[in-house]
Every structure is written in structure tokens, then in C-alpha cells.
Length: 313
Length: 235
Image (cartoon, rainbow over all chains, first blue to last red; front, side, top):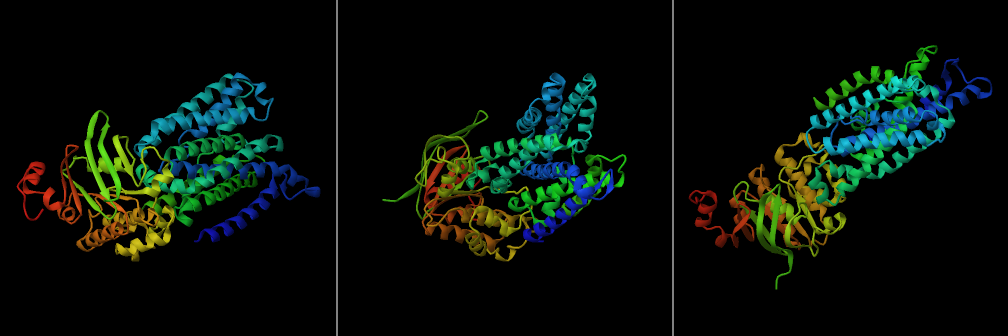
């Protein structure tokens, strides 16, 4: 399929999905009097779109910069770092953390950047196994840290536990959504121009530098912006592992591996997948909605296995 | 007086405490194809990477009018192109994608034709043999230098893993590139290929053992000293 066709089809599907998502909720199907329910649901839908976009694009960028199809901010501990950053802030300053809109995104960014930097320092430049093992180690460490803090901070325990299960979309209000949403968009807009550099990097460091790519600059920007995307998405939804892996693979299966096509389509697919997962989770069980992360994992795992078999024999 | 595209004086490369290149000097003029040959571990690849500015090195170096160690990557890419011995891609691009990635799809398609690979433009890299993949990456390196060609083309084992027909096509493409005004340095194990170049450098253990026109540089004594076996007509 051409990139244009994929974009047009994807945009129509996403628009339909947005209408559906605005129509589904614990109150049943419908828009309420004068669209009152739509206004209530809009922040959640916007949060899912922004987070999904950042997750899809962040995953594609991380795979590009590490030249590794298994790299995903969820598996490599970057989301874990973001949540750990939030946990540290909430654990140390449970009240002050909410006084400014940027405190929690900043803590998430610090955590995500810390794990990204460690991943780049320790895990890159070797085999896939080295990158993934480093990422798994970081993930386990940050998850344990978050759980320890959650266990010791009475007020934030439920909040952090929900975040670890990717169940924060239900809290979305415009007040909580606008800043992380904008950060997701900013990270996405700044990642898109890296497409050619990521293509060059896919031939290895020597080749990339040989063809005029600024390898160090590209790596630093991609790591920084992926951390920003992961942090902003974590603030909106909590930890969702699968979308950063699935969206780029789906995008590559549709339009091929050029990053100029993969990055925007992965963003579109990421937004669609997260919104679909969230809508399904609350549409099928309105009284006890499933978290977007749980639905993503249930539906995403078989889809990912199918893509892996198709693409890698 | 020859117009030198590459001037290197006393190049030295040391990595992890090992001296890989030691005091190598060379020049390559516009229109010249220079072969760098020698046994495994002689320093051929390191020499090419040093000339391309891809590895820290000591000594004086000028490629296409600039020192590749200090200029910005974009300017550097306009003065020299480099193709590694075993180029690999993390993603399974279509061959034609390589032309877009390098920024000159039309030029890439022309070089692909010259290398007898035009019919593979729509295929994915994974659908090509190792030699065909190398050819596609060579076309990428050829297309990377902007016209008029007055820079340096640095190719590591360009004809390895190719059949005889494509070896000749690669040799001809390199010669065409040089005749258009560039200087080419080719690292190769293939002495028959090296003998057909304009100049030849013989390296051993990082040092320059012989240099000059192939007939004078690649004597039976040099072959015997460097490769440790009697010269044979087949080599």
C-alpha cells in the first residue's frame, strides 16, 4: 500500500474511532443532553490520542536509533523510568507534586531520560540481546522502585499502582491532559525531521557518517525526544508496553521501512490502537472497565506474533 | 603538476593500544584509481576509514580540499564517499529506497544500471544475494558524491563476492568515476583487480611496504615478503 493510501485510510478509520469513543462510556451509548457526555469524554479521548501518538512514534524512533526491531520504550525501561520519576516525586513531596502543572511531567521526563541515557550508555552498540537485557534490567529496577515507593506512601499507593497497570486514562481531565498532551505533540513534531538521519543510521555508524549523517546529534536528539514522548504519554495513561512495539511493525508492514513514512504512520497507528483499546475496555464492560494497557496486551500479543511470523519468516 | 584530491602524510591510527596504521603517506590525483592491498590485518580497512575521517588518526590529511577530521559531516559527505566492506542495513529497504536515502535517486539509478543491477530496483535487499547487496551499496556510495566529481571515493573490497561479469562492471564504474574527475582508493585482496589500478599501495602490519605503479610495486619479492609464499601467476 502507498503511504498516501495508508494515511487516508488510517485517518478515516481514526475519525470513525474518535466518534465511537466519544459515544461510549459508563453511561452507555450516546452523547447525552446537548452533547454533555461528549464533553465529559473528550479529555479522555484526547489523552488516549496524544499518548498513543507519542507511544507509536517513540517506539519507531527508538527502534530506528538502536537499529533494533525489538526496541520499545516499554520493554527497554523508559516508561518504567518515567513512572519511577513520578513515584519519587509523589513519594517525597506528595502535596507539592500537584501544585504546578509541570511538576509531574518534569519528574516523568527526568526518570525517562535517566533510563534512556543508561540504556544508550550500557545497552547500545552490541547485540540485540545486550540492549534488551539492559532494558529488562532497567525495567525491573524501576518497577521495583515504583512498587516500594507505592507501598510506603499511603496517599499515592492506588494512584501509582493504577499507573503501573496503565489505568490512568480514566482520570483524564482537561486540566491534567493539556500539558502532557502538548508535550506529546511537541516530541512528535521534533522527531519527524529525524527520519532521514534514522535511515542513514540504519546502515551503521560508519555509513551514516560517511553519507553526512550527524550520528551523535541524531542519537542524542532521538534519545531525548523519545524520553520526552514516553514521559508525556506516561503522565496520561501510565505504563503501556505494547503500542511502541506494535505500531512501528504494523507501519513497516504497510509502507515499508523508510522512516519518513514509518514515523508518521506509526504515530497514527499508535493513536488509533490506544484509543481502540480504551474504547473497547470501557465499551464492553462499562461498570468495570478494563485498562487500555490490558486490552492492548490481550489484542496486541497475537497481532504481534502474526507480524513477527510474516516479517521474519 | 598533478592535482591531488587526497594527500596524507604520516598517518597513524591507534585503537585500544594497538598501532593499526603507522606512518602511512599517500597521494591520489584526480582521475586516479589507487589500490591498497595486503594480507589480513594489514590495515587496509583502517586506512580507508582514516581517509574518510571515520576513525581518529594522527598525521596530515586533506581529502577534497578539507581535513575530514575537522569539517562538519555534511561538507565532508560532499568531498568523499565511503562504502564499507560488508555494509548491512537494519531494515529491509527496497533497493530504490537507497537512492532516496542518499539524496540522489536518479544518480543512484544510473549507477545501479552501470553495475548491472538496474533490474533489482524494486526488490527488497533481503531478496538479493550478498554480492548484489554489495553492488547496491556501492551504487549508493557512487551517488553520494555530487557532480562534478572532484572528491574521493573510498571503497572497501568493492568486487568481493561478485561474479566475474559484475567484477568487471564494478571496475569499469570505478574507472568511469575517476575519469569524471574523482580520485578513488580501493582496498582489495584481489591482486588481479589491484594490478589493473593506476597506482598500488602494499601494506603489511600497518606500514607501507611498497607503492607505485602496479608493475613496479607488486614484484615477486614484495609478494613473497608480504604474503609469505612464492608469487604465482594466478594471484
